[in-house]
Image (cartoon, rainbow, N blue to C red):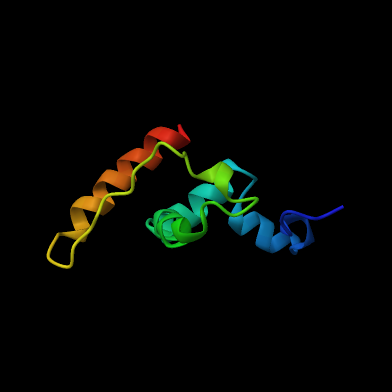
Length: 88
C-alpha cells in the first residue's frame, strides 16, 4: 500500500503545530504560503495530461495566455478567487 502522506509519522509536537488534517493543516500552509497551491498548480500544467495528474486539471479550463507585458497580479487574483471558491 502506498502512503499518500507522512503526517502520521510526524512527532506529536509537529502535528500539534500543523493542526489536524485536513482543515487546520491546509490553513497552516495557506496562511504562510498563500500562493503555493496556485503556483504549483500552474507550474505543473505542462504535465496535466500525465496519468495521475489529469484528474486535477479540468479539460475544459483554458489557461490564460500571459504575455511578458501583462500583469501577473491580475492573473494571481483570478486564480486565488477560483481556488477559494473551489475549496469551499
